[in-house]
Length: 147
View 1 (tube, rainbow, N blue to C red):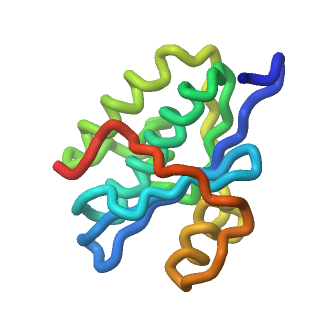
View 2 (view 1 turned 180 degrees about the vertical axis):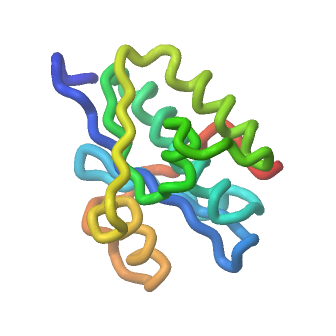
């Protein structure tokens, strides 16, 4: 259940190996990591979009209405905030983002450095076969997959 008058902060990160290749993403909030090890085939930017959409889906499922989304993808955040033109290859992701934010009263995006992105740290540790700093929760899907 959502905390009254307190925004929910979610960190998101996506990646793929090789690029393009099998995508994965993670979302961290409330001391837990949600990891999706197979989000289909795509490139690193689509993986970042899917991570952001998964963060919004998780926040909605948790009943949050005021969210702060923290990620290290300048490409995705700059497209959303209109600083760069949307990439045609990810127009569906931008449209999905715009639809996903409708039920929220407030959504803020924060670009954070890689070293501050808790979801990115979790992904790196998972790739290295190490435990994440936060307990793992069941995978969460963004509602989108590969194109």
